[in-house]
Image 1 (cartoon, rainbow, N blue to C red):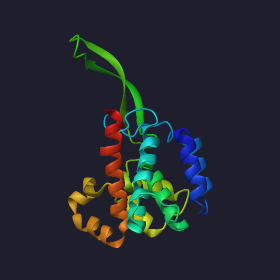
Image 2 (image 1 turned 90 degrees about the horizontal axis):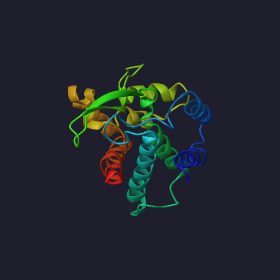
Image 3 (image 1 turned 180 degrees about the vertical axis):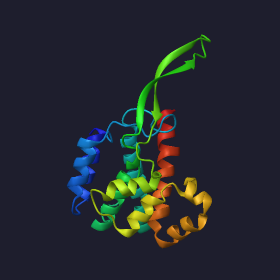
Length: 202
C-alpha cells in the first residue's frame, strides 16, 4: 500500500467526527500535503516527506499508547475515541507546513570536482506566519473541531523547541501537566524525526 493510500485508510477508518470529510477534502484538493517535503534540509526533505513523517508519527504515537495501556506496542483493543485522537494528532500536527516549501535553483560546490554547480532545492516561505503549532490549530479548526486535549497537544508538539516555550516554559509545563497527549505527541514526533527517518537515510 502506498503512503497516500495508508493515510486515507487510517483517516477514513479512525476519524469519524463531524466535518472530518471537509478536512480531508481540503488536504487532498486544496493543499500540497501529500507531495510536500517535511523540511528544507533535515528529515523528509524530499517530495512526500511530510506525508511520510506524519505516518511515522502515527505509528510511534499509537505504539506509545499501546505500551501505556497494554504493555505491548500493538493492540486491536484501543477504544474508538483513543484511536481517533491518535490519528488526528499524528496525521495533522504538521499541517502548518502545507504551501510553505518551494523548489528553487540553488548553488553548491561539488566536493569531488571543486566546481560550483546548480541544483534544485527547497526554500521555506510561509504565507501565513502564525507560528508552528498555532498555525496547525488554525488550519485544522477552519475545517474540523478538535477536543481541548488535542488542541493542547498540537499547539505544543514542538516541546522545548517552540519559541514560546523558550520565552516562558511555564506554559509548556502547564500544558504537559494538563494532558498526557502533549508529551506523547512530542515523544512520537521526536522518535519519528530522529530515529525512523534518520535510519531510513542510512
